[in-house]
Image 1: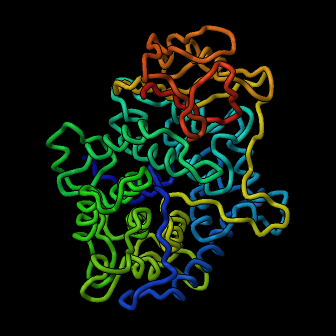
Image 2 (image 1 turned 90 degrees about the vertical axis):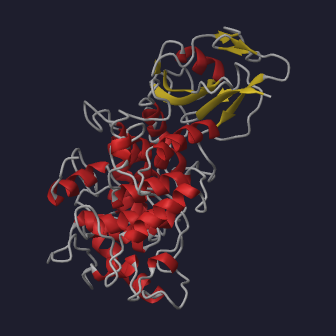
Image 3 (image 1 turned 90 degrees about the horizontal axis):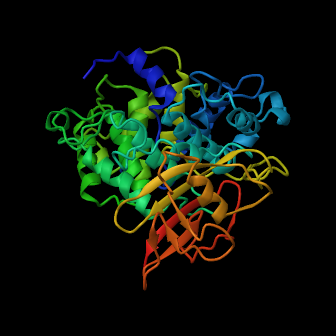
Length: 474
């Protein structure tokens, strides 16, 4: 593989080949063998949050059109700070959440030639900021934006399969960014497809890397990467894989083999650094594996959390990238705060301290005449899962399942998600999709935003941002 210098690696991380997941493991109550105490961790979080607040621009922004600091939202949430409470000079009209939402809603974002990781990064950080990623605005649905990159030729991958990180972050985003009620947003069949691809890309040493290795013995035999191993572990765990699973156990052993005894750092591919350690710790956090005990407490009494805290400047709160650095790095500080705070690659948004501020910011209904996208999966029960983003121009504040399926026949990306629907009009029950009809106990059912599957009808209500799953079976 190419040898990438650390300076380029930092920029690549910022663009998002970055951060992972959920299920954060709380580090507030630690056994006596842990060397960083709850009080030290609390101080690190407090000072770290204070530093991250200094990264906010005068207009309230953390993100822009290029590389930016939007991963701060995942770090804030992990540390218990609501993005809506982060304001420049106390100006609530420029709070970080509102400014970020406005950016994501613009037609110019992210760029004329977007890639799947743009939308995955935004989904993870919007969720952490308290913005429903499927309901950013009347026209912006980040979940549907991700669905557009489903690879029909290699199901389970999102974006070019050679860029394996796009699939890892798809799993992190689609499974980590839950509904406002806290439930899964996407169907099990889609979760399973992504999990299978992540498993197939695990290297022989138990780690993962950014590029595709599946089916290539030479690539599978190459060394895993600390950063991507943390992200891939987290992606599996937020997809429902338990930490006792064999692939997670192998990944844990890989990370353990990279520990530096006298500091608790992980010896990453590009040397010891805060970002790599932050990703690895976030992966452990997401899987409910305490990074301060057991396999991650070295013989010299050091842990990865010890190393991260040793990289922090206090009372300033910023983290340096390399141990030899003499100034803090924004990206290292974001990764450091999130990991020390016990976070994965996103976190549920905390309740705001600002009086009257809601926990969630979300579009409440369609805007008639404004084109939007909806996320749709069609599972015919034979393993032939179809995933697509459907372009729909609603004629009212709500729509119907029939209108979505009809739109999918000509306005879906990737195409071919829906080729036919029966009946083709009216309001009655949907009896056939893609030529497969109800038969005996095998019938079509629909789930809206993770709800229980139920019999579908053309007039089944669909709202803005709803994630729709069609499934045939008993």
